[in-house]
Length: 269
Image: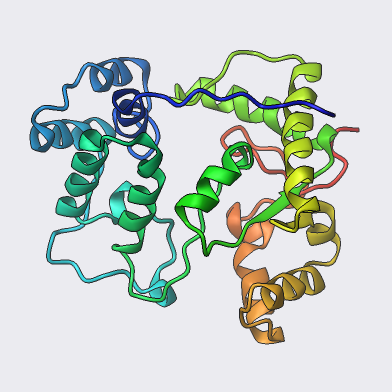
């Protein structure tokens, strides 16, 4: 596909609201709660944060908490891993910046402040592909890894994801989309990814390879990233991310009303 992506830079206030007011970094489920979050003003950030945390039932870490050590952390970085003052500092920096293009850098710096020096942080979202140039400018030393799967399986997974998010009234829920629309969305991202891959800016893995030969695929990735690719580490990662472990007992192929992954290749059939 030959297509030029056109993006308009949003104003700071819009970005701030998308990042914090019930979406993005401080997500709130439930339509009524989202309306209350969207109506909050940003003049008094301290009061706004208290209301947001109450709406989302979040508990942030105390200001005296020590930085997180990844070797003892088994959860994702998110609003609940922030120290309260650090979260307020990030909100203030985003709200008051005269240059919206600096916001990704502000976000990355804030994430780094939550963990011990030298830690490696990974952000995960498919649509980062569409803004990869801007993200690399904000974090020049970053490495980019893309995991691609058969677009037909991806379309089926997207359908289940959309249905579950609507049921939960998640802030990122979407309208019903046709199979063709979902495959088009996959194609646009794949085309963009191919451009970056041709320039050597990204490491591409296939979901099917991870599924069929996790150990060798994972080891090659770790070595490429300069990480420990020993059999012991790879085996530990495999056990921790095993489908049955992650889903608390489900077997590959088993469907669930409350979870999307089925751990199977070729489910579109």
